[in-house]
Image (cartoon, rainbow, N blue to C red; front, side):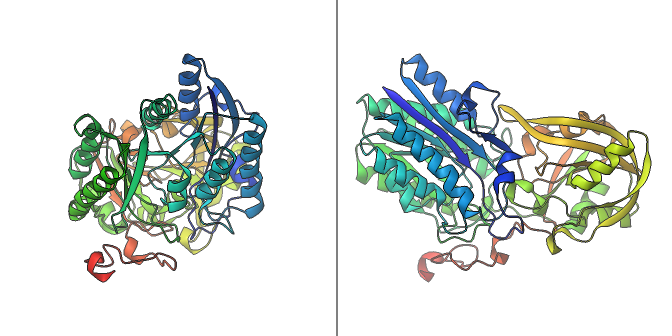
Length: 490
């Protein structure tokens, strides 16, 4: 047996002012040596490590292509998309006949001329290897398309949001692919459109209907004869594409009718939970007031709209301006993306006090820059933070302090996953009353152990958590919560 595998991913926010170009990949993760599975894992190479290990345990040959991941931003430059796509396609041509193709993507990648990059890539691979078993692992914030479904035999999404389960999902995908290629099963897939657009944190270790639903999905194959896998596509609300929205996929052994029925039954079950799973978030003023009034410390407040992991610039000043206006202290904030400030402060050195103009560099969604007198309390290079099963780089960074407010600023646009962003620069969170993280939910698992309370806050910026305010132009069909009954409206 011969396995071919690759990774190509980004999450495209079609409303982001930042194009996804070559630097977006080079600054985040780019391995053109075709050996990412032999180096330290991160969120999007965990699967490659699993697949190589499992294949070699079975004595299979492994052909590895490129691994490339760009921090989410706007549309991918067409030539960049085509170059990386063609590298994978050409590597498959050079590999000769293969038995299994496993690809790690995101599922919401769009270029200047292609709104379904994953569908296009998988269709080209399928054309080259019509008899191979083709599997795809995706982030749940994908746009599940008919083209992806047609090109693939197996599609598996991460089930957790935050995405801490890339490895177990990769294990499941490999097992299903091995069973199929070795003749033990004949998987068929079906998809159901839930006609919803939303934001669904699972909060591992927590409680609530979303947590219960995910746990039930994971357990379902052991309880329903013939069912191999269930996977929920959350959808990525900030992608203006026809398929944006929530979908359910069922994979069943050999029975297309059962697959269709199962996808619809579980999709309707999720639809019935729509009011309970809908995330209601306070605005900035109310969220900050709630944090101030809390007796415990620290309280973590998520600046959801400035999440680099959803394509935001990560340099908005709205929360900082409100903190300053209220005269608050004992507040720590991360991560501001401002390379020029990092360079100036690193050059000045730890202990230096200097004026800086922070943030507000990327247009109206970033707010206006803020002039501050800061003291450089810490500095580091080649930094990383833990997330899932690996380390995610966040480059060079400085810890700045102004009037009892601690601010982490870096030169590599990324969201805050872990308290280690602060701690590795010497900023101790136990001493702070409020911690502000520029993230939507990936921070959750990392901060639960240190937070007295977590507040998801609907801050101003690029990623509004209310899908009804997103100016879609391509979404086809009615959807909730914009339409109370999309089934009747359609």
